[in-house]
Each structure stands twice: as structure tokens, then as C-alpha cells.
Image (cartoon, rainbow, N blue to C red; front, side, top):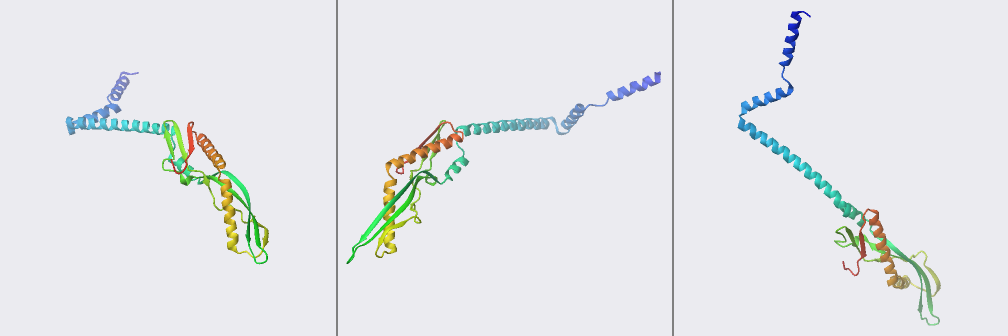
Length: 233
């Protein structure tokens, strides 16, 4: 390599060394900006920038903590969506009682008596109506879900199957009002027989057991369910 070539190579290296790096360009730009706006204003803006970054970091961490706390609360609580879904169940049958009644009526006549005997069939459904729940029917007591169900009742007053009703014996002439009166007698007798304390207790036990199992299947370990009586909470 000649002396002239070495001189060119050295000059080239010096030219490369004299080119500023990216950081140097940024620093140089900041120094020029400080020179233009003044040191006081520059440091003020710097402090504001630091505060903004710090506030953003704090809010991000706070939002993360709040999200975590909601997830934890849902493990031992219950969401409004779940409450709405349970209330939308509406009528929930827990016991059905099939019954039949023989009703007769007698009307004295001048020569002979008129008589009408009819057989009525019906199925009485006992259960609860979730639309009857109280304002605070479901709450959380520490780690336990406490549920107060509405009273067990007869879900449908029109439980007689009129298509199966038949006349066992009929003599004389009878009006629709006479048959309606017999229908009402049959309905009252069926209610008196079906709505006894034993059947009501059985329906309540079925209600608490099935509701307990439903909540357990939703992921709640500690559940306490009872049925409200006589409008008391």
C-alpha cells in the first residue's frame, strides 16, 4: 500500500469518526431547545412530563388491582346477571298431586228426585314463583350465599281436567250453572286434600334441595337456602 493510499484511508476513518451518533444528535437537539426556550421553562416541562408518566403508571396499576379484586369477589358473591337468570325461571314446580273427586247433587221433585253424579280429575302443582321473591332474597354473608325463596303455593287454580270430567249418573234436567257449582265443589275438595301440611313440607324440602344444588353447580361452595312463610322474610 502506497503512502498516498494510506493517507486517504486514514482520512476516511477520521471522516467516519467525526459523524455524530443518534444519541448525540438527540442530546444536541435538546441542548439547542434549551437554549431557545430557557432552562427554567425546559425543566418545568421536564417535571410535568415525569408527573404525567408517573400518574399513568399509578392509574394502570390501580386499574389492574381493581380488576383483580372484582374477580376475587365473584368467587364468593353472585353477579346481577345470575340473579336475573334465576328470577326469569318464573314458576318452578316441586310437587304434583293427582286427585279425583266424585260429586253428587240431588234435587227433590214432585214424583221423583233428580240426581246428578259427576267424576272430576285434576293434577295440583305445588311450587314457587320466582316473581314473588323479596327485595333482598339473595345475599352474601361472608363466604356464604343466603337465599330466601318465596312461599310454596298452588301454581295453577285451574287444575281440573275438564276433558276427562264425566257424568257417572244423571237424571232430570240440569243447567250449566248447576254443573259449574259442582265443578267448584270438586275444586275446593281437591285443594283441601292436596294442600295439607305434609305435601307443603315435601314441596318446600324439594325447593330448598334443588335450589341448593343449582347454586352449587354454579360454583358456590357455601349455600344456605330456606323458604319464606306467611310473607315473612
